[in-house]
Image 1 (tube, rainbow, N blue to C red):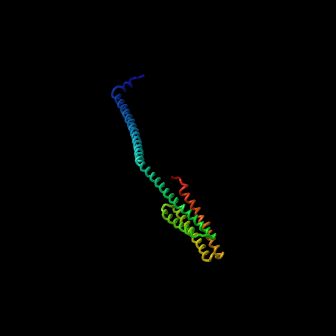
Image 2: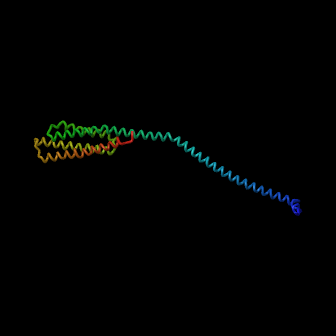
Image 3: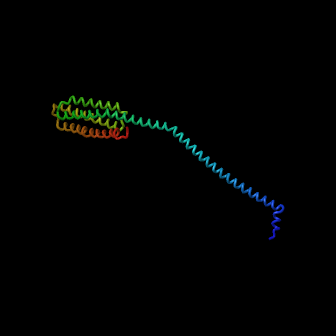
Length: 223
């Protein structure tokens, strides 16, 4: 093999040119690799910064939540206490009103029976009247603490009981005016009216009121 061309390449300035070209290629490769590494490092740094920023916001939110927690707890506690106070005030109102309504209903029934049987009814007449007045006074005193539905039922009940009392008084006065012998028709009309009001409307209102009060103060989740 002829080694002269090879020797001619390695001799002289051609070798220097080859070495310079190789060095240039190596330099370009190094620059390219360095630029890639720089870009990758820059992306890693940006991702790390985003994660740090996100974690910082989460920490801030946790701190704000912890700071506001006592305030929210205090507000919730205040709401519960207000609800319990409202419940107790309303229940106290019904505890006072209901016995008076039952007393009125009882005395009114005794008055009606006395009138129908021709018995002395003057004292029962006064007791029933006073019981109606006391019931209305007690309702007015406790009205701010009653629910609207219960207030309306109590008002209707007292009004109906008063109508019963007035009708029974008409019946009693009729007996006195006619010396104990009014016409059967007049007596029947007044008696039927009393029964319709007392046994019908008043009893129905009492039952509805019982259900309404039970729903307000018994069938509840507190206290």
